[in-house]
Length: 87
Image (cartoon, rainbow, N blue to C red):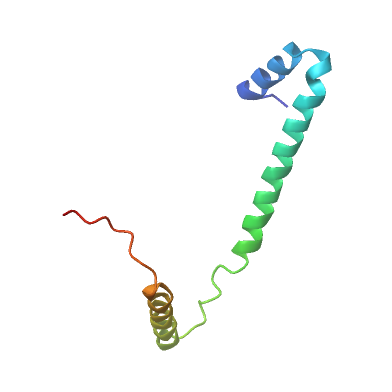
């Protein structure tokens, strides 16, 4: 299997790092990879809800979206606006 140019560059850089610093580099790379795996699994868990409204009737969908608008207006009604006035 042929390595990409970027992968070759990363490996060359790692070879130039002093031996006593490799533990720190390993920790950084390891936790970075774990973070990537976690974000991918989170995206997959969110995607299980994709299309969950496809069986909803048009009337029910309109009611749902109207209710969301109403609830958002109520939730934000008591908040001060953050618009700057120019006097």
